[in-house]
Length: 77
Image 1: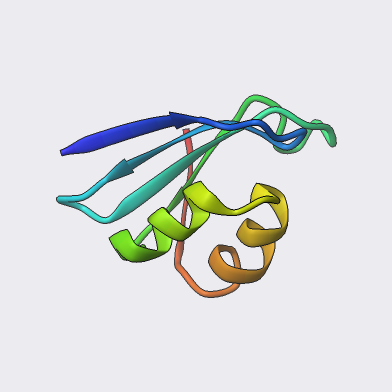
Image 2: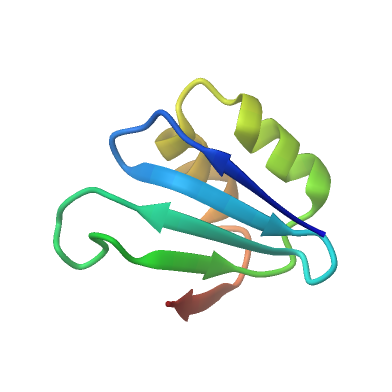
């Protein structure tokens, strides 16, 4: 099952989590142009971490500390 959440963040617009594949897709909205409008895909992300991400006051800080360095980057779409 997939769930999508809108995000109040200068760096992210929304994210979608697929519980079956454990893929977290994060829609970026900030500059630099490298990531502007891209959807970054991360694999093997456990559901409990996505719940913490949903509740985090700073989505960008949580992403940079708890997701980006810990889970495999699968590319973008």
